[in-house]
Image (cartoon, rainbow, N blue to C red; front, side, top):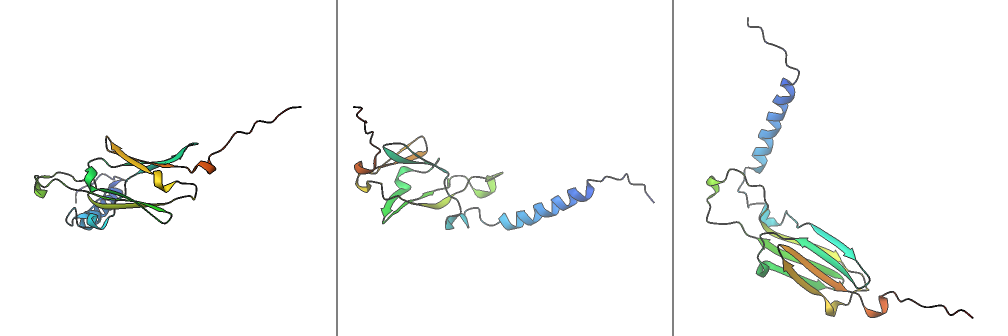
Length: 147
């Protein structure tokens, strides 16, 4: 009988290997299969100043012609698709971590937005949507007369 040195982390490593195998099975489908259903969403920053509400969305690798920005009722929707390069065959990849396929984000808009003056631009992979406020909603400074 061979003497085996006790290693308290052996069971933990074994459990980790089993979990990795399970996750590999779950993710071993075609890399774009479930991503075509829109499982990824671009990250956004939303901030407000006196003039407007601004939404900035990270869309690296998304062609501008594949981006759609639409306002319906009180909802702003950003929709598009990041396409995977077709020149490289799937078996040549070592790792695929970036998400590909269709995406959609929707945001409720406040009543204070002037929908006729909304502007969108895309620079360096960042989509910037400027939602100007209506004139009557902007804060106004009132001076107090002293007698």
